[in-house]
Length: 387
Image (cartoon, rainbow, N blue to C red; front, top):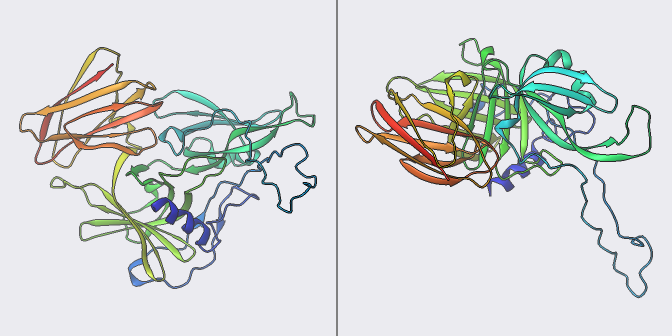
């Protein structure tokens, strides 16, 4: 249901940043929005960055454009057929990269970046990405992939042949301080948090939110990018907010401290009539504090025990690379029986929440385990076994 609501939002958010644009991938300012309820007046007008709508190719059956004798009905066209290589699996944490180089080749823009595990990877990108080299090189960005039609030539000379290929068509700059939160319905990336100077109602935060039901089909369906976000903290809660036309997107998070237990955030979307969407339980699954993540290896048939301790309100995070089809069993024990763990899949969606034991079947990508205490401080032993 949330997926359907979000699609409606994309189609009705004032047309000033919600509609997909084929003309450009650079941010364009929205017009001044109409007055919103007092609860959201602290959220300023923002700019939006939406990945371009790629061209699509529809194939038809031979003779489909000919008259069909004895029938007044129009023949139904066949579904679009894509010759693109294997697509990305959907909104995924693996699309975060520190861009080290952008260069124009014979038939495409080429991007080189470093992923969250420190490995270097390359990707093809649209020409517009290379045109943003001054903005993007040496930044951590969220890379948006779409299917594009490119020349199937061995040089820059036109040859009349084309093919479909997954290209990086947009990049949302995350800056030096960023967080990714997710639940079963949403994945939200908040970037450029270093631009908040501690004064309420200030900042220039970026937002990239995806409906978890959305999966790439050549369009960034169910995803929205915003910038110009501000932060306001009071009464034990911080609100990060963005405006998109007549709509405001607000992320409510508790102010954490030694006595904090609940760290989950809530997403609320409003228009001039009030709250039109609300999603709870958005837990942190990745952040710029990747130095706090421990990369672990899991070998088939070998029991791995990870020991640690967390103070109340804190979390330990572990990353490991999944092998498609592999089954992993996890269990945790603690002296006061007060340690639990979450497991997030590569897309950021939570597979397991606040568990002491679980068995999961892996896909491809980087999985995250988050360990915390249900009360007080917790010392724990986390056991992981793969088949």
